Image (cartoon, rainbow, N blue to C red):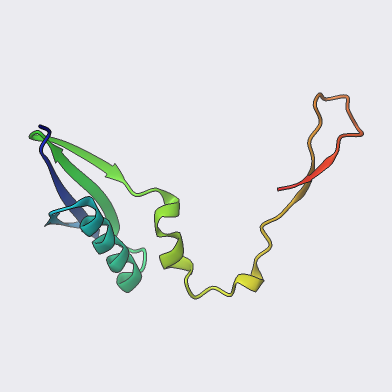
Length: 100
């Protein structure tokens, strides 16, 4: 059976490291979200799993903290749809427009 220990590595101001252990991934990820929500994005946050004694350190994806970083943004300020032509080949000037 694979044994995995879950850690959150916080690098304060991208200078001073600190290690925090958790029972589950969910607890670790929740702690990362809480830290980002309380402290902004000045600190580096990294996932560290020790899998059967071997370390595996990974980053959180850019979208992981999206709701935390943007929870106070007014959604009416954004327009995410674009109208583009999607030709099947370079010479097709009558390609249908698609909203993406």
